[in-house]
Image 1 (cartoon, helix red, strand yellow):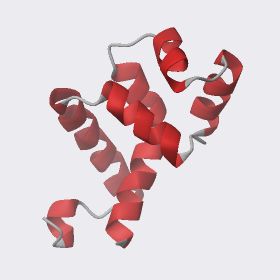
Image 2: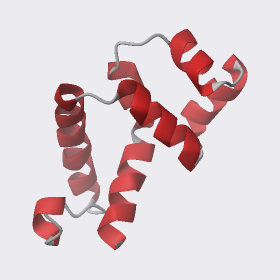
Image 3: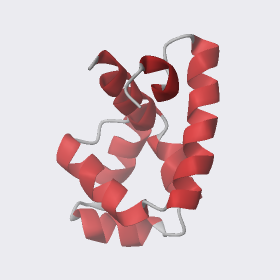
Length: 93
């Protein structure tokens, strides 16, 4: 279970990169999340999206190609910080 929480933490920590790599403009994401521009930018900067907002974001920008690319980058960065256990090493997959 700890591995799942750490993976979520890594995604949240890198949400700005994930959003930047998506094909969508901020205005589209803001509209779909149903929040003000100021609130969206603050949450993105502070990495403080709620669980429900993160679920909406993943529904919006989830694609296998983008996911594979970004998760590889996130895993490398997390391994460099020594706070991430890849799923393949966790025994969960």
